[in-house]
Structures are given as C-alpha cells and as structure tokens.
Length: 376
Ligand SMILES: Cc1cc2nc3c(=O)[nH]c(=O)nc-3n(C[C@H](O)[C@H](O)[C@H](O)COP(=O)(O)OP(=O)(O)OC[C@H]3O[C@@H](n4cnc5c(N)ncnc54)[C@H](O)[C@@H]3O)c2cc1C
Ligand code: SF4
Ligand code: SF4
Ligand code: SF4
Image (cartoon, rainbow, N blue to C red; front, side, top):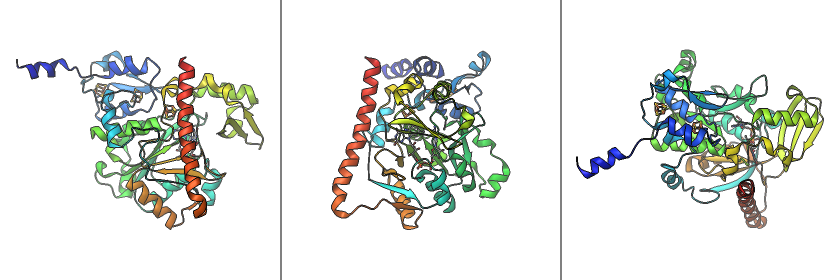
C-alpha cells in the first residue's frame, strides 16, 4: 500500500457517536437540529431530536448509520471546516463582515404592534413573500405551553404568529427534515414541481446561522433551499423549564398569563392584564444554557442580515448588512417604504456610526467576559 493511501485510511471520518461524545454529552449542543435534518432527509433513519437533544432513535437504528460523517462536520460546535467557513464569510473578527448598518423600523402598523423591537424581521419576511422572492420561511412560534417551536410558513398571513422573541431554544434547522413531505397542495399553489427549486428564508440565532453556513459550505441538502439567512443578535439563551420556573417564582404569573418578555439590561415581563414585571437579569443565570457561555458571536456573523435592539433608538431595530444580497434587499425595502430609516443628520452621522460600532464591540467583549467569569 502506498504511503498516501495509508494516510487516507488513517483519517477516520467522525460520525454521530463522536458528535454525542464531544458535543451533546458535554452540554455543548445548541440544539439547532442540523444533524437530524440532514440525516432524516437522506432517510437514513438513525437519529432524532427528543426534548431538544439529538440522539439515536434506538440501538437498532444505530446500526443504520452509514458513517457518512455529515452530521459531525455540519455541526456548528465542531472544529473541522470552521476556519474555511469563517474565511468564506470573512467572519474572523468580533463583528464579522459588515457592508453597512442602520437603525430602522417597520411601516406596517400590525407588525409594529406585534414585533419585538422595530418589527424589521417580520417585515423582511413580508417583503420577500410579497415580492415572490421566497416560497416559505423558517420561523419560531409558541405552542400552547409557551414552548418555542420552529415552523416553515408558506404565507405572509402567518408571519404575525411568529413575531416577538422567545427566550429559549427553538431548533430552527429541524423543520428541514420534513421538507420532502410538504403537501402537494402547497407545492401546487407555489408552482413548485421540484422540491429542489423551493426558496426559503431562515430566521435564527447566530449559532444556528453558523450551522446553516457549514451546511452551505458542504453543499448539502436540505440547506441548499435557504436563500436568505437572517440572524437575531443574541447575548444568551435559556433552558425553557428553568427560565419559566424562575419567572413564575418571581412574578407569581403562570406562563399563560404572560404576554411578552424582553431584555433591556434586566428581564421584563408584560402580563396579559397590562402589568409590567422587572427581574434582575442575574437572577436568571442558573437558567442560561451552558453552550451560551462559550459563545462570542453576538451579532450573527454568518447572516445576510442581522437584526437586534442593542444600540437602537426606542421602537427601532439595528440592522447589519453583510452580503450584497442583503444590501439589495434592505435598499429595496427602504425604497418601497416597507421600513423607515432612523433619521440622522449628515453632521451627526460619523459620530453616530462610531458609537454604534463601539456598542457592538462592547457587547461582544461583555459576552467573552461572561465566559471567562463562569470558567474561572
Ligand atoms: C434568545 C435570544 C436572545 C436575544 N438577545 C438579544 C440581545 O441580547 N440583544 C439584542 O439586541 N437582541 C437580542 N435578541 C434579538 C431581539 O430580541 C429581536 O429578536 C430582534 O431585535 C428582532 O426584532 P424585530 O422586532 O425585528 O423582530 P420581529 O419582527 O418581532 O421577529 C422576530 C423573529 O424572531 C424569530 N424568533 C423568535 N424567537 C426565536 C428563537 N428563540 N429562536 C429563533 N428565532 C426566533 C421569530 O420567528 C421572528 O421571525 C435576542 C433574540 C433571541 C431569540
Ligand atoms: S448516517 Fe451520517 S448523518 Fe446520519 S448519524 Fe450516521 S454519520 Fe450522522
Ligand atoms: S448539529 Fe446542532 S443539534 Fe446536532 S449536535 Fe450539533 S449543535 Fe446539536
Ligand atoms: S448565545 Fe450563542 S450559543 Fe447561545 S443561543 Fe445565542 S448564538 Fe446560540
């Protein structure tokens, strides 16, 4: 056997067993669902997601594993190919590639009422649907127990149910596992005769966008259907049960009595009867998911467009544009009055931009500090 052949044989492809050992069992899994979505679309019938934890369906199913390794390499929490993906998206520094950034808010009064901040994310989806740029969008909704569930929507009428922030895991890549089972009625209505022609937008947290880009880099199905990646800013996320235990203990509200939650230095809850409760953010520390403590991507470096409230004037969102496609989209939305830019005079613009960049960098360093404090 030649030396090079020997070397190839020595490189063992890592599989779901390694993913379990290195990521899932070490509480490093961000529960994006990328591993399961790929494996299921291939109909390998090996792994599933239970309570936001990927696992073998059964010991018997374990034998079906083809050891292709795609689950391991597309996971946002594994090292291989990450540096190449980082290079492709110019995501090496704190904030990633930025073409432009601005503050803006929706011009849609219904989205304004239901959106978390400036309602920009929901308005982007509305624009993409109305302009027939997408056939569907992956968003997050609440189920009847206020547990976030990821969902593919096919109509702009469904956008409002997803508006607002859910401060716990919504495994956004997971709905892709059922992409081949989309009803024939929907496909007919959209004029899609080949599932590979479907065009989706994706909304998720920075770690979920990293999973998406790793899949794009590997050129694998079903991520190839996602044409627009929209990231939310994200400082940390919470374990649902632990979070709601604390919220209920502190406010005496049951989850079904809560209407909206938001973070502005502290954690705020608006009840359905109109009261507002403030909880010191530190009190939620025990509910923060472990993997968030090692995460330093605040602005979603792997998106086309990132959106968050940090640094935005009240009622507005900050928008970071990262790709040419993202730029064309935001320019068109401004032109067609879907969103309105926060007005700043030319004289103030330079200082304003400098201040915002400083704020983004400050959030990243706060995030890294949090990691250091927890690991000290
Ligand atoms: C866990 C988490 C932590 C965040 N932390 C910060 C922060 O520290 N600083 C900051 O500036 N912004 C943060 N954000 C983003 C912020 O809360 C808003 O989502 C963002 O400003 C967009 O507001 P909007 O009015 O444009 O969105 P909307 O128009 O209200 O649309 C919200 C979109 O977010 C999606 N979504 C909601 N919850 C989730 C979820 N759990 N996972 C994936 N998608 C979801 C919905 O599907 C919807 O498409 C966080 C978001 C999340 C999910
Ligand atoms: S078949 Fe491939 S994708 Fe599925 S679990 Fe095995 S290695 Fe992972
Ligand atoms: S791909 Fe996502 S769900 Fe699967 S192990 Fe990695 S982080 Fe967890
Ligand atoms: S803090 Fe990082 S790891 Fe945690 S949900 Fe947000 S992007 Fe994902």
